Length: 380
Image 1 (cartoon, rainbow, N blue to C red):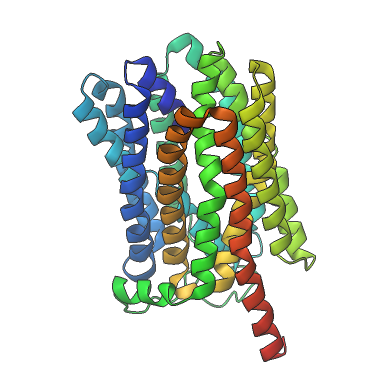
Image 2: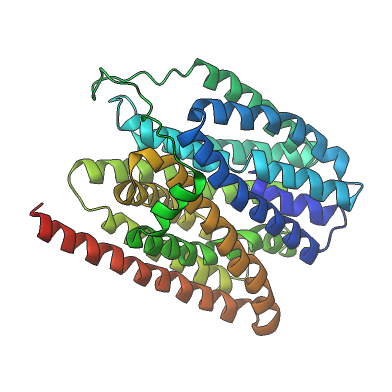
């Protein structure tokens, strides 16, 4: 929720749209450095549980400082950069720990586990959005800090015990002594991995522009925090069923390419519709499309990364892909996109970004083609 409400929080406290976009972009830059760094540490130095505990533990005081920092631009930027370094990488780290654990534990299914998180976000958005109308947006940071504290305690209990799949071995992959440059070199030489990263950047560029303008458009259309909360609720409410559906598709032998392409089409339609709607109710209702788009895109992306990367570098591969995608899609979506809106108007700009999304699907085609060739050559 914070990634959406931070825009409203800063603008309502006198920060311009441009300054707010720059702060969000700087957080993404910090995330670009932090995600692969923490992923590499999880693969080659510590175990991933220890990395997550470190990031969660430091996130708590950082969140508590945010309401205090608003009086100073410098202080606000500093605290948000710390948030970008310690908290935002948790997205990739939790994806990685779920993905790796699922390969060794029959009880863990990525779509179900990740879907529970999205469902929780939907329910929280609905109720916390209404609460913030009463208490003020500053309360969000206290709630987030409390949730991080609960997550920290729960992660302490996680042992990574195997069950049903190779149950005689450790739940964590064997760590090999490898430098971060060597790990990056292995991934950068993987053409399928590179095409996949470029595809996700293009797919998410329009999504970043859309997410930036959700709070801005809602405010402009006369909406309140509760309306933004409802929009975020619709964003997330069907993600869990879609993620479970993805797991069912893969379990039934369906290619991961199918849900990946379906998610891209939903993303393109959402971005285009956001550019042409002009009423608050219709704008909020359109956000349901994000449930289908992200609900299928997130597990499809993680599944695709796991198919093209070695398990010894899985955390690094997932964290690096997410970090590069977030930063570059933010650069193209938030910064370039906001300028295009000012120059062309919202309808042409959002139409252009719907086209970017379709181009992102085109960049995925070499991944499919090369995989098919390998299957033919190996007889699989």
